[in-house]
Length: 356
Image (cartoon, rainbow, N blue to C red; front, top):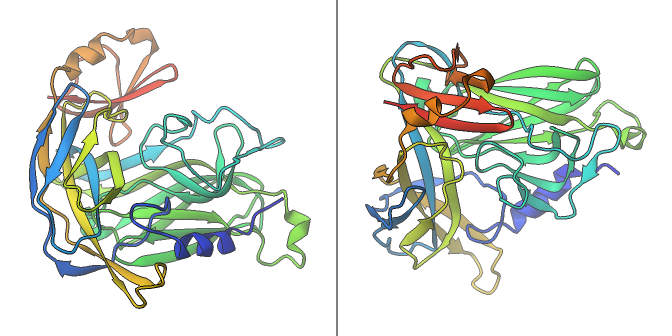
């Protein structure tokens, strides 16, 4: 039976906490000084420990881990994408419902995505490469182009169905789109509120014009694929998510990232830190509070040990390999690649590599 996602979302928001709740929340800032990051320690071929100075009064911290590319030509680029092809269970005819209210699609127990930080609330439904529920994208740095970007959603649904797309950062901008046909539709939604830690919330809102919603209780709008496009200029720095720990409770001043599953052979990564604060209206009521955040720290560069990204490309069987630039241009396998970031697909294996 179709869930009332709006009510579930409100319930989740009411119970959220930096270190306890899975749902992302807009990060309201009051211009508080950023944490001071320190050099990483425990550096290995696939991980490190992030470190920072304590911030007075902070209740918790969040650490974002990034890869980086510098743009060499003006143009429209795909700066993040996900196809959900790793979801192998369920179908449109017989979808499978998650038993947990919230799941982290990036968790190793689920292993449903090629990019980190995807979450779904509201008892997600899966349909073989598709998912629906209250869907949260990863945090994305969308500060380029003055914060303007386009979300490109592939939706499998029905005519008359409404999908609500919210872009959340320091502000929240909500837009609604109506599907005009049954089957697959590509939906493009423009926003201009991109910040360093933007995320999107995507919700199937049912059939607003229907007299009886229960007539459509089994008609879901599934997210089939997703991308973010931005116009970028020469010299723009693009950060792409590799990992996140959004639940670090003070007084901790470090966080371990021992297994960077989504680094895709990037041997240089970056991290930054934000601190969270709370003000309780009633000290005896732990849910009655206002939460805000510091500014972000400077980016801290981490050089991992070992991997040679050029050798990683040459080691693949060229007859089975597809290589794409971050802007979606395909390159011949086995050919010399210009310096940059590339997506390499070999069968079901997908990785992101850097060629220097």
